[in-house]
Amino acid sequence: MHATVTRLTNAASDLILRFPWAGWAGWIVFCVIALARVTPRRFASTFTYYLEATERLLAHGQVYDPHALGAFLYLPVSLLVYAPFTLINHSLAAGVWLAVFAAVFTWGCYVLTTCLLPQGAGDLKASWLAGMVLLINVPAAWFNFKGVQAQIIMTGAMLIAAVAVMRSQWLRATVWLFIAFVFKPLALVMALLCAVLCPRMRLPLIVALAVVVALPFAFFDTGYMIAQYRDFGLKLWLIATAPAQEWPYGADLSTLLRAFGIVMPNMVSLAVRLIAALGTLYLAWRVRATGAARSFGFALVILSACYINLLSPRNEFLSFLVLTPSLAVLAFLVLARDQGDWRGWALIVAALVLGMWWSLAFDAVAKPAIVIVISAWLTWLMAKPERWRDLVEAANPGAIR
Image 1 (cartoon, rainbow, N blue to C red):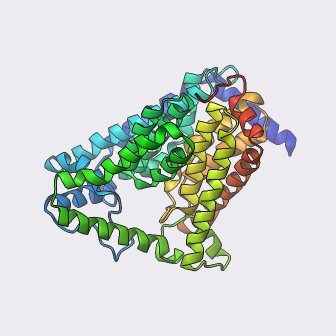
Image 2 (tube, rainbow, N blue to C red; image 1 turned 180 degrees about the vertical axis):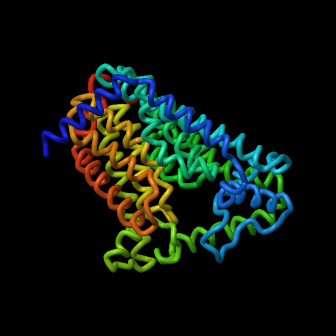
Image 3 (cartoon, helix red, strand yellow; image 1 turned 120 degrees about the vertical axis):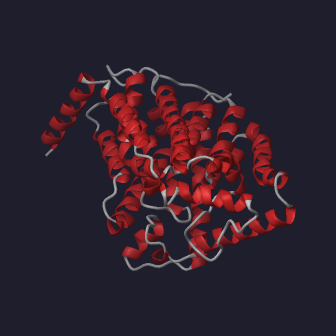
């Protein structure tokens, strides 16, 4: 068995080295196809919701349905960004935003790869390696690109923010977290970690949060906006406390437990989220204490992604794009030290499995199970943060300034 695995990994390594350009070629072809196939039929359940919610906001209508799990559930400020695009053809608007989303995601993967692996991996240069990271993410990106999901830009912005933290560029990190949060509130997980652990980001993040909340009041009546925020809060509470079986597209800790006949009461579920949040903060703090810049920034984004996929309200089978780029980069960090290390190849397989759509029943169990295994390994690494630091920093140490 070991000999077979070795042959397969050697063959994969040889193939990558023989065609280093294949990653970028595959990713560019994927993006072109996705852009060419932008039609309302494909993005009806996502980007259309953004535009329809924007139109309701502009008409002073009811933006949120606090009694339904589906439909629009992002912050009002994001609708201000989409407002000008309600005036043009919906397919053209979706195409423009998909191009923007794809550009931010591509840049995020590129800068994370080249920052953590500036010398590449073996004979594979860092710039080519970034293309391989993107290629691994094609399955995870497929459904998100198809629907023009805000998850794309949120993930890309979080990756860029992580690199800014690695370089002690605190204002730049805040700006990118602000962008991520505007498009999808789940970025709050990483923002809170940064607020607690990065003193120089606290005030800018508070200002950014205030801008996010207050900006819609500059364009709409105060009473109307207060009512929309109230319904937004009620909707989030409904989503956070709804039983797992009520959302058929879910794939998180609750859907995994349900497969074993375990249904957590609402308050228990909230308590688990809080305990996990404190545990995530503790691990990031442990890494922060080493003073290693790259390992700290990378810990922030990969821990945030694991938390989002396991414990955020209404995590779906296609939501694992937030984690798969970090897994691909981590895989190459492992393989850069030893191309035969099975953990690196296992991480690549995990990223591919998390990205693909299998079936709702399979995804609801298998995907959170994979994230739990990865989270357990990360916990083991970061509980003694020197392990994590040695894996991430390798020959390119850098200190937090």
